[in-house]
Image (cartoon, rainbow, N blue to C red; front, side, top):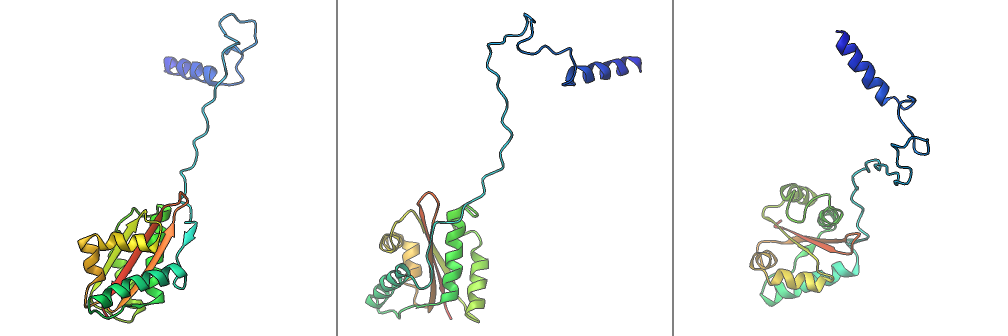
Length: 186
């Protein structure tokens, strides 16, 4: 018991900043190198919080209109009906693009089933649901071209059963664009 008490007392004295047993730089103690730089360990910083995208596509902007023209011109050239852009589905697509741009979710289809359910709710029904996402393209034309160069994405655009769509995009704080298109059969 006495050994434990002495050990705790020694630990307390050696850790006590008011203790005079610890030599200070500038004292006349030859064991202290007063020319050595003093370094402190910086306090840990809080994890970075994803920033909001700096550029966000809305349902009425020129890029959405341009994109819808590209999609519908292509569909009509294939004998398919034009898709109706639904504002609420567009907001769902935009939110996913924002989440990818801010790093809230990884690039991809995470949460796809929730977005489909939300899109069906927005349209008061619906059957088939599909989604295209892209990253890095800087214009609606380049996003469209990327999707048209991919058989799976192209199949979504050319799906004869879909009737409605929502399109959205967001630009990350580093300048990278994220694109989302949701397709619904109503």
